[in-house]
Image (cartoon, rainbow, N blue to C red):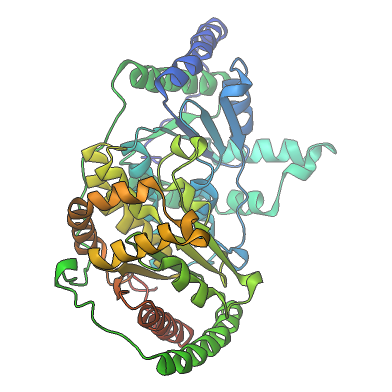
Length: 498
C-alpha cells in the first residue's frame, strides 16, 4: 500500500482556487452533520515533519469552532501506561454532529512501541486486531471514520528536519524519536505498510505530503466526499458480526436452584475471613499493577447494593471506585454506547465495581426499544471484543448475575413500599419492569449464553438468601485475584508471546 504509492515531482497548477472552493463547501457541512447527528473521526497519521499539524490547520480554517476539536494524544512509554492501549483514543470519540481531528493516534503508537521493543510481536498482533475491532465498531454505529497517512520520502524528511533543527525557534520540535525514524526510515516504512495493509477494513488514504497544497486539496476532497456521502445516505448501521469466542456453558435461569442458604454463624465467620483476605489481595494487585473490573447485573431487589458494600468494605478507598450506571446522559447518548464505560475504566492496580454495565444494551435497551434490533444483536460480539481488549490488557473481569425468583422479588418490593426508610428504593419503574419478567428472562438467558467467555465468564449468584450470595461472590473474587496474583489468570489472546 504505502510502498506502491508514487510521490510526484511537481505540484498541480491552479490549486489555490480549487482549495478555496473546497473550503467553502467544507464549511457548509458541519451544520448538516449536526442535523443528521453524524459524528466524524479524522485520524491524521504520517511521517515526522510530513505536515500533519499544518494540514489540520488548513482543514479547520473555515470550520465553525463549535463543531470540531483537535487532539494530539501523547504516546506514553509502555511501562508508564495505566490504561488499555486504545483508552486514549476511545475516550476521545466525538459526539453526534461533531468532528474530532486526531494528530497521530493508534497506528503511530503501536508501530513505535513495536519497533522500540516495548511490546512483543504477539502483543503487536493483538493491537492490530483491537484496532480493526475498534474502527469497525465505530463505523457500524454510524461514525464517519477518515484515516489519512501523509507520505514523504526520506530525503524530503531529512531536508525538513534539518531546516527545523537549524532555526533557534523550531529546533525544539525535532525530537530524538524523529531522528530515530529518519535513521530507520526503511524499517518504519515496512512497519507502516504492514500495519496499514492489516487495518484497511476501514480504508486508509495515502496522501502526498511533499507538496503541501496538493495534500490540502486532496484531504479536503476526501472529507467533502466522505461527509457528503454520509449526509445524503441513511446513517450507517452495520450488520451483526459474529466471531467464535470460547464460551462457558451457562444454565437457563429457570433451571437454577435458588434454595442455597447459610447460617448466621457461618456467614459471620466466612465474611470476616474473606474480607481480610480481599484486603490483603488489594495491596498485592496494586503492587503488581493488575486492574480489576467487577460487573454486577441482576433483578431489581436482588441485593446488588448490599453485595457490593460487603465487597467494597475491606478495600482501600484510594484504590477502588463504584460506578452506578443509570440511563445515559445526553452527552453519553450522543456517542457510541461503550464510550461511557471506556471513560470509567480503572487504572492498573485499581478496582472498578460497575453497578449495572454495558449489558444494558442487550437487556433494557433491547426490550424498551432504545436501540434497533440490529444494534442489540450486533452488541453481543462487540461486548465480547471489548472484554477481550480488557483481558488482553491484563484485567481481571468478573461478571455477576444476582438471581432471585419472582416471589422473593415481590416480598422485597412490598417490604420496601411498607417501610418508610426503604421507600426511596422502590419506584413505579420497578413495578413496571416486574410485569416484563418473562421477556427479561429470555433476554438474560440469551445474554448469558452468548457472552460468558472463558476470559470474562458470568457467575450466577443465588440470592434468595442475601448472605449466601455475598459469601459466594466474595469467594469467587478472592479465588480469581489469588490466581491473578500468582500469574495463573491467563490472557484471552489467541497469539503466542514472541
